Image (cartoon, rainbow over the protein chains, first blue to last red):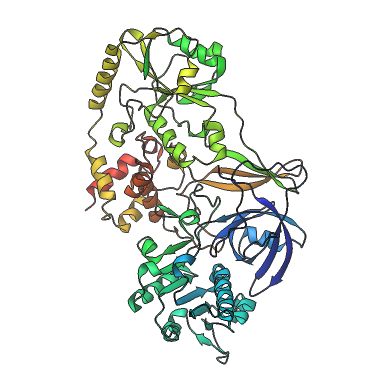
Length: 291
Length: 336
């Protein structure tokens, strides 16, 4: 049976990063005194795939889906990037270190790691859409750094195009600073006045994409996209014309969710549910379903 | 499959009240028929009339607590109903329960109730208002996999009782029942086949379903239909296969917090609206289109081995905008 009940977590810490956005650090707590262990499926915290999500329960407010920016370690500590937007996130932003919340997961289908692990990959993200890509990019960079130390891995190329409305809307600054040492990053800003920030261009990701593609020594086989749907659709169409196959372009979609297990019906896209069929879909799967 | 002949139906009804909370369809003061819990001394004759609401709330509650948070941890609040029988349920509603059994097969709240239930089906021997169960393979006879026991009215006020499951067999243990001969089964088949002939012409329904799946119905068509959708949720509330829900948090008197789930409707404007106010189904036309695809789309047929509509016709009866199933299918059929 499905387990609808959150595990108890503690808010360990948070750090501001970007406009109304924070990195949150949580820790799963062991069974409390008096708590009866659920007889249903346990939440599988030690097997989180990049791109999967969890449901965060903010007491007195409700639940909403968030992606992991660091999967739970053996001590049950994990991280998430949250932008203050609606009731659940406003409730979270009002909480203090040491407060108790709930979490259940992991849910959904993440990035297809197994099938793309040796490919050259173009990543295009917009705004908060970079969050579901953090554990994937971190994992790949780790693998390359360690792989090269042992001289085992062929250099796999990764190029990131990151779009934001303006400088204050740019998120995940520490992550991008860290990645910059290992991968090529192009930043785009819709509102860009200074025009002297390195690797930053005026416009949307689409305006810089050809330049990003020319960075690859051999054509990228795979593209991972996450951000506003309109951006993903235009980029996916561009990349299809460029020659990347529809089943090699992957999009992480966002929908309102209440159950995360395919029951509440809110996250539908025609006959598919984003919570169980996604959030990652190939362009081939969803092209005809997205208006 | 064992079959019995029953001369006196109240004996069966009273027997079931010994081990089950007894529920049957009754006519209320408002003139409508409803499912109701009745005591053994108030047993009524069986009615053939379709109830205003299906029995879906017996399993998928219109609102229920999912958990309690006491400030320290979360605890599940599973339902623990006593065994109950739904006596005399029509085939359309039984087919809907069979459909939801698949949908909620791993949901402990639904299954907590469902496992305590005994379903006694009742064959329909005449079409009901707006009903088209025959067209969508949901009646008028109760199919073998949808009920524990099935009743069929025979001539001379007798009943044929068909035992379909072990649960059904256990429920009638201890009752002295006459075995029915094969003539009774033949009579049942004949009566049901005669009933099927009495359904009005359903060509516009079959053509409408075909056309809906052809991909040739424009978004403009759905926008036009949606002008008549008031977003009242009458159709989704009464539809026996609709199962969307929302959740809310409620503060209890003892300061504990409960999380409830409650019926929602995909036809509400805010159904898919996100915290950012982005709304993937902002257009009423897109919501109405998706609702009808959920009921008749071939993609869903593949998932459930049947359509999501069981032909009860309640949406037609209730829709104030006159875009229930018959009206919509007629519009689709006429659309060029």
